[in-house]
Structures are given as C-alpha cells and as structure tokens.
Length: 414
Image (tube, rainbow, N blue to C red; front, side, top):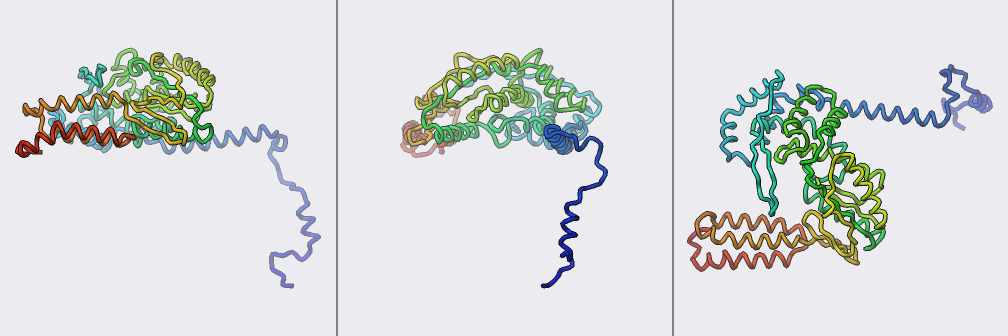
C-alpha cells in the first residue's frame, strides 16, 4: 500500500482528534441564540449588503454635480432636438447650442435656474380634447437631463415589470404582448374559464398628488439640490396634478401608482396583472375574488388620491372577449389569443382616407404624404389578426388614389 503524505498513519489518533470539541473563545451570547434570532441576523445582513450595493450603483444619480454635468446636458440637448429640428425655436437653439447649454449649466450650478412657464394649447385626440402644457427647449433639456440621469435610473427599478408606459424598451406593443402572455398562462391552468377586471383612472394626470411625488423623492434621494429642482418643476403645475407635455410628468405619473401595482402583485397575488399609465387589468379564475380585488383597488386609490372611472371599470368573462388599449382580445378553445383592431380605429382610418381626397386635389397634400400616412396605419394594423381588414383598406386606398393617378398618367408624382 502506497502511503501519501496527507494520509494519517494512526487512524485512532485521527478519530480522537475529530471528536475533540472546539475550545476556542466564542463571543459571549453567541451559543445562546435561537434559530429565529440567527435567521433574523442573516436577513439583516442580506438587507445591509443589498442596500450597500444599491447605494453604490446609484450614487451617480443622487449627486447634483454629476447629474447636471455639461456632458449630460449636451447629450440631453441632442436627444431633445430629434424629430423637432424643423421648429423655429429649436433651430434658433441649435445655432448656438454650446453657448446655450453652457449658460444653462452655469445657472444650475449657481442655483439660479427657474422654469419659464408653459406654452398651453389644446389638441383633439380621437374626439377627446386634451390640454397640453409644453415647455421651452431650454427647460426641456434640463428636464430630460434630470429624468435620464436621476429620476428614471432611481425610480424604474422600483416599478413592476408589467408597468409598460414611458420606459425604455416598453410601450404600447409591450403591454399588448404582456396581455397575450398572461392570457396564455391562464389558459394552461384554467382553460377559457375565468374573468378579467378592466379598470381606468379618471383624469389621472390632473389628480396626481404633489405631496406623494415629493414623498417619493425624499425616500429615494438625499441630495437636497436634486430634490429642490424636482420640487420646483412639480410646483409649476399648481397645487395638484401634472400637465401633459413634460417628461417629468410622465415619470411621476408612473411612480404615483406604483404602490397600487405592488399591492395587486404581492398582496392580492394576481400574476396576470398589468398597467399602461391609467389603464389596467387583472386576470383570475374567480369573479368573486376579482370583486374583492376591485374593492381593495378602490381603497388604495383613495389613499393615493386617484379616482377610478366607474363607467370604464368592469369585470368581463374571458370567453366573451374584451377591449384593452384599443385592441380587442379573444381567447379561443384551442388556447390561441386573437387580437383584433378596435372597430372605431378602422372607421376613423376610412374617414381619414376619404378626407385626404379633396386635400390632394387642392394641393394641400401630395401623393407621398398620403402614401406615408396610409403605410403608417398598415404597419400598426399588422400587429393584429387583421389580414382581411388590411386588404379591404388597401382596396379603398387604390380606389381613391391609385386608380385615378393611373388614369391621369401619373403626371402628378407618386
């Protein structure tokens, strides 16, 4: 037998050595800890380690000088000019951008930057009047810098995954895909039996609590200058509510209802839950439990200062189909989720094409403008189960524009 250096020659001596109790100096009271105390100690150490890692990774978001550096301001300016460089105010800013950014930087560092107010106007969106409070390009650069380098990096990790509005790699189609995913998961467990609770907030932006927004800021930030300039932007909207047209309004609108999202996911234990700004849904097999959830949602919303739109809030049987974000959803017996375009969207597009005809004849629009608008709608429609709808719309488009253009010999350009 070959003896290795690490193999003991006296097995009895090894056994006795192993059996010897440890006679080191234990800390006083360590051996008397209960299992609950040890578990609590491990939990507190994990919390401390997690907080230290969180503070280290987000330190740059909570420092005014780092957030509003010249480089970040200039980067924000380049983002703000995208797709709006045709505006006169933006073109004037572009001609002296380095100087304007430097002036903004110096005002921020001196604590003298103030909002210049809003340019207010109304737009008609699908028959609904919306009041817009737009800001100047100078203030938009500052708000963009604040949101991109402080608010969004600090607040977005606290959002649930199914909060799909106004975030990078999220949006309308993300929320539609999540709805489909939740319906598929529900089908694998319960088939087509079940219900969906659809809810809507009434005048969501107009009722956002300023105190709630400021409380969120103080929970996440410690730099008083970052908190101060954010409070200044919030106070510009008045005593309550946030205006449409500012990036900071979008960010705090998401954060104001974040507590509701976590309550539904973690307390009510609804996996099939999602929210897109002021529209949300809950999927569950029990109608009675969804009614209980609606009662709890009303209670939490009252605490947050949010008003539920009772006319648009309803519980629908999944097998009957329902509408969410202007899309119609059906769950078939085979488990396939069918997405249909909202009927009013089809009617609106047909009317729009017919209104383009006199505009084209009078020279207000060109064939290129009409084709671009139509292709935009077709790209949107291809996200749904709407092959026949697209074919019918193409047929109408050809009758209104292509055939007359061919008859005229194509002399007006295409």
